[in-house]
Length: 197
Image (cartoon, rainbow, N blue to C red):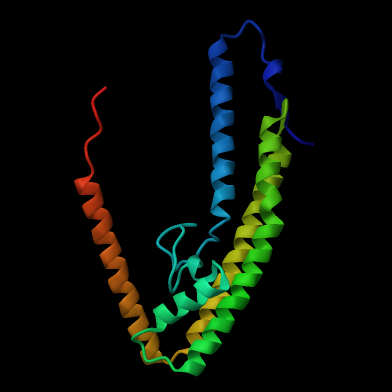
């Protein structure tokens, strides 16, 4: 049995504040579902990314498997510059990345309807709690499937590289993360104060 509620079911003698509170809660839930759907564009990293479902390119991030084939090939070449990767390794890694990207694109296309369904559920005259929960579970399952595919792609790429190459690559990525963190801190520090109201 699903829990169905409606704004019209509220007693008319209750203050309008309750309706406004419930309306605000509806907007908050809608925003959460919209953010969740937006996050599908960047599948969650399996503990390797800087945060949950952040757009992040490079070794260890979901962005490694996103983009047009020529972009992915350039990203792989850039990632492998300076680690002594052979042409055979580069070719093999490009094939792994292309296959993972194709799988993730297919997964993303199959999940596009979840966002629209969520908006429909939350805009309905009655809120079907069970249907919203079911949609949340479907979205989470899609995120988990994408995370598993990303993890497998990262493992496959890592197996192509030697331990020394993986160490060099990890050092380069750490240096890049430090540079990006420093840049973000400078931007926050140099950000102009908001104008007084």
